[in-house]
Image (cartoon, rainbow, N blue to C red; front, top):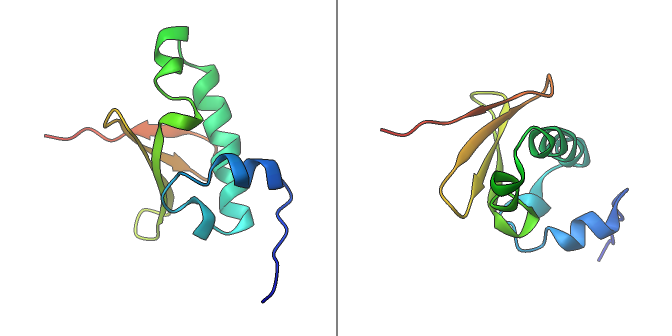
Length: 92
């Protein structure tokens, strides 16, 4: 069995509870980390508390949209783009 070491082993361990994170490539994990940190820094403190690591439910790559889809436990969903921006996914 091959052991794959991440550039950020601690990050991989802290994200073990997040569905799909472990299956992302290193480049996609780096994209997630970069955009997630920018996204968090744009939030007011109360909103930020609802979007901390432990509140992330799922991260998956959407090849049709060419972005990461990030789902939080409160139901909020976002698209994280390669250009380091994000958009909230509004549901009807």
